[in-house]
Length: 378
Image (cartoon, rainbow, N blue to C red; front, top):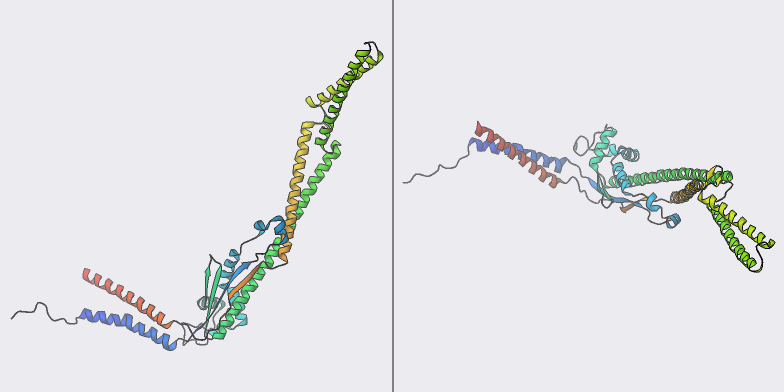
């Protein structure tokens, strides 16, 4: 007879240890968790709501005239970020607690259901920590949509808390509106005062210049002088023609010829003087030559035109701010009203059981591998 190749399989001590560790690390904790979830844990109802912050898109009269909305307008994305943080803040917890007894509701099953309850003597910091467990907020920054889910042991309480969250969010947006309108109007009025003062100083500088130089407009004054020179040249041409006609009919000693020659010389002398005034730049007004006078006047005119444009822009911005102050530019758009649950959805007992089994199995597997690797090396 042939001997068997291997001995019959039998359970050894290490197998018993593995089975015992599996029972102690997986099955027993899993059974305790399932017993707690299905026997002890109380049902929770969920109320869902969704909203976003929207900005008014209608154009005002100042938008159509000046088109300043692209400069003074603001995006609602930052306000939605503020609202996201506000829903998870201590302030809203205090406001809801003042209207709804959150601690009384969530501590009614303490200490029997300690995992999903809060202790009766919890502080506001403890309640804020528990609030983040019972109020789940999801926020899509690309679209600006915000979904809020509130869990409670009673469906009506869950809906009431969700309604209070929506109401407090609307109040916060209204406060942001009021602050923005007030700040925008104050800043616009301050800018208008500065622009008005700049315009006043610019016009006063032009008036002082005109009073000191006795010239309303240097450019117009030069044009007038050029007109005088042109007129003198026309008179000179006419006098030369008349002089030639006299020479044809009279002699050089004729009194009329002498008078015509003197008139021509006087006109030429006057023309030379006028030309010398421009070419030598010796015509001064208040001790300043014409080039410097023109440069100073042009600078004053540029300052005045810039001040006028700034004043018009500031006046338009103030009209825009006052127009926005008369209407609500930001508002809370609720696209999902707080729902009233008809059956409990939480705690998700089978989901929590599966996750518990998976993590316990992973821990047991790692522990067994570490143990045998250390034992084999020893």
